[in-house]
Image (cartoon, rainbow, N blue to C red):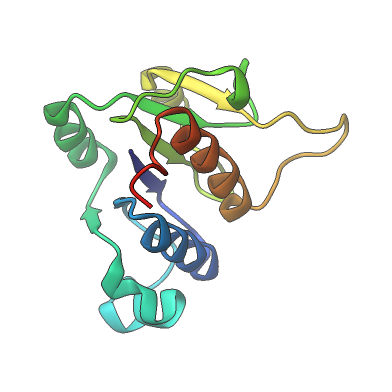
Amino acid sequence: MRVALYQPDIPQNAGTILRLAACLGIPVDIIGPTGFDMTERALRRAALDYLTHVELERHESFSAFETVRRSCGSRLVLLTTHGDTPYTAFAFEPGDTLLLGRESAGVPESVHTGADARVRIPLLAGLRSLNIAVAAAMVLGEALRQTDGFASF
């Protein structure tokens, strides 16, 4: 299981997701360009002392990320408010990559159509979305539960 962040805008959200991934032993892909400074110093500030505990891979572009992901045979599962399948009804696999879009704009249509699956978190009518780090935690937790990803703890 992996988490991928598509061109993240907000360093605090990226830091929270890096901390989550560190605590759960989940690798993270960050797909550029980002909306903030991606130096080691800036990431350490956002992720605090958890940065040394996360396997982090940076990609200059979505196409560079896709080359690596496809070579590993990982399914791309997009978390989106436009998904048809509630995340609790989706059958996750251990090798899945959970992709979260940019906080300000999500992902482009080409990424939507290229995803192997699009899942959503059901929300009350009239409400747009959750914080990206909250969404990551909810869906990652369910994916790990389904795939016995917590068994090594």
